[in-house]
Structures are given as C-alpha cells and as structure tokens.
Amino acid sequence: MRDVLHWLPYPQRVTYRVSALVQRCIEGLAPLYLRELCCSTLAVQRRGSLRSAVQAELLVPHTRTALRQRGAFSVAGPVAWNGLPVALRLTPLSHSPVFFSGLKTVLFDRGWAGSAPE
Image 1 (cartoon, rainbow, N blue to C red):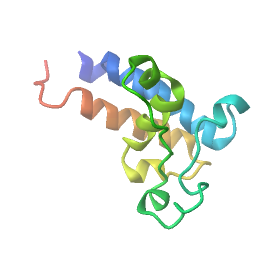
Image 2 (cartoon, one colour):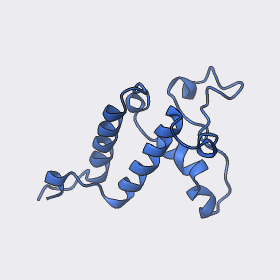
Image 3 (cartoon, rainbow, N blue to C red):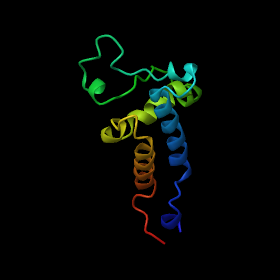
C-alpha cells in the first residue's frame, strides 16, 4: 500500500518539511528571520576553500546537549540539509519541482530501506 501511495514514514516527513523550508530560505522565499539562520559555509571567512563550501553545506551552530537546542530550526535545518545527497543540494534554484521530487525519493528510500513490499 505504501509503495502505491508513496507515503513517507513520520521521521522522513519531518525531514522533508524542514528541508523544504531550508530550500526556500536559500532561494530567498522564506521570511528574513529564517533566512538568517541558514548560513552557507561559503559566506563564512576562512571556510570558502573547504570541501563543505563546494558541497553547498550550511553552517551548523554548536549546541550543548539540551534536546531543545538540537530541535531548534537553527540547528535542525542545516543538519537536515547537510544530510541530503550533494547532487540534490546542488540542484539549480529554478528547478524547484525537480528538487522536491528528488527529496521525496531520497527520503522514501531511507525510510523504507530493508522492508519488504506488501
């Protein structure tokens, strides 16, 4: 049934929504207060020549062990974005439907990996 409907498990649905919001922040379509939380490693001094800058990764702020801090968008957004495949992160901004389709495919594969179809 899930293969026919192409539904995502709950953790992957959360990752999908957060990654979609980060993508809108990168495009400049999200509110300013959210765009400020998604800082590219390319924009930070002394990180422009690192591999993470070439792979379109976002800067993840250092947090303590509190779960609330790791669940904040300033941390969860960049962590979800950096966890995506590089080819998906480097999708041109004008191809949003391609990005969302690829994102759902990647998360579907991660969510139901190893389970037998019904």
